[in-house]
Length: 481
Figure (cartoon, rainbow, N blue to C red):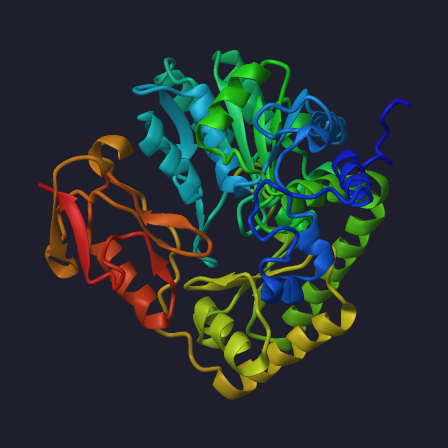
């Protein structure tokens, strides 16, 4: 029988496999949980029972020919792509596969600087050279917006030898650039368009959503199914258009992705794709309604600003993802990360992230109305108990980089470790970022300025989780000799 979106080939194969009472003389060594009863008790027998190795009835992730291949074909159909790859290394692996598949050492890529660290990591690996478009910033919110079409066009004309344009769709905050126009510009200049849709999986299935990468004609897109799509953490899709050589991309993926793909992750992708293909419109209608309701309730508290479609200006904010509940906190006199920490430590509410001026509460297919009410009432209580004047608050989340060397050149160069206060004026050879969201404050090859050092110190003071440097305490930085 022909495959339809009602099928979930990997899941179905695992169900059949479970009926056969196969005696395992292969890995994993826990042998369906028998060798590790504490693990089996914690995760459940059904879970450890399908934590199995690749084999002929279940296919092989590195060279799929049966049920994984079928799952990829169904995913490609559901997302409107020519090809789809099931990824078990998170959307980091999807993003890096996009970059490594399309760029080589010395190739130029046009991109905004507020990309995820996975992009910068890929540039370190392949030696491609970034050509940054500094995004416009919103002065009130302190956040970077999208790429302006005129900036993309001007940069493409200034760098006709660039191989690709990279776009966030959307940003962590829900901001979308004019993706269709950017794709058209890239293609007119013989460049590929690569799209990070880590936070935009729902664009493919909901109504009244910003345009998706595949619908806009982009060449490749990384869709983080585990974020808004309901699959297990670390599972993702890499989507490709007709212009992309499927076999070559598979070779690139196999350079870094595990040969021991987790069937827990693979089956979760399969089941979640089926769920969204069959019920996505209704699911995301409810998610959007819930987010819009929460936005209105938070704005009625006073002080907080849960921003939305009113930011749309037709260019640097071409569209807004209404499922994103991004909230500015500066008028309450608290940094976003301070509200983040208070919600977790005093109200047992875990939100996605907080930065210097904002926090993001991720609303998706598993949320309940009573949880929304608890969040809103907790925010009102925080304002009453902890609110103060916003004078003296730092809010700017984006600092224009001064690039002195390519990421690869700087990362592998001879370096010296300096106390952070002595690093001003030197060229950084490592990453510094708040995680989440994982957008580098400094990347290898960028000049360390007083403004950046002040930002890092302020972020530490406010409780941001800083990562990246070799020195875990962020007291020292590696710089070029």
